[in-house]
Image (tube, rainbow, N blue to C red; front, side):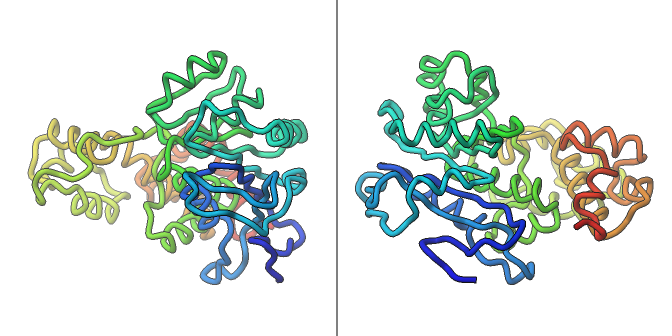
Length: 330
């Protein structure tokens, strides 16, 4: 395939991701989008996305004048996007260009998936596509967002929100979480894990986790959760009560809860459920079609419990997941 201004020549059936870059856009989120959607994947054996950058101007000055972006497609490229990532900029009170807002509205009207990283929620709201919908944005802009867009159901203390065809991420690092979530939705857990390994990034952080942790660096080295997490991940098919995890970490259950909340922004049981669901997905993708076996090997107990949790967390049944991501999937 040929390369043209960050664009891969489109193969038949490949999902097209287009990023609109506008004046004062943040380059970090642009880099996140490029890392997740724009790189070749020799470790997988195929390219996952057809990726393109576009801009309303031939020359675009990035955030705080760090650099000028040139040589990308014009705004018409947005009209061919299956997924459109909208501009984000730190000066959220500056109105977006009418041409950009029109491109967002057209994409929404034809059923494209819309994504906003960090302050990208302002772009989506200004375009009018978030009215009555769920969204998130960086916590520091929560009050101003609510004041400007009271009809949007802002969830200010989560990493990202998946509201179907419109998805928003809270901040810079959460853009990677949402990007990997999209890869997981499009290609399954196994491929998402492969992408996350290349990024050297956590394979799965649920969107409902908090935007920030109380203690980003533990006070004492022995407070790290890493050993107990690794121990539990190797025993997901076994009973893992919170008291047992606490004993393994040599702390009380109450202390373990506090450390999970402080370091991971979630509870031990919620983390375990997420890890077990991720394992169940991998087992299905590798060809295990007996859902009772999947449930037992992943520690979820029964096929009925597996079905209920997958419907609750992913909005899809194990059978539907198998049709989409199993070895026989197209």
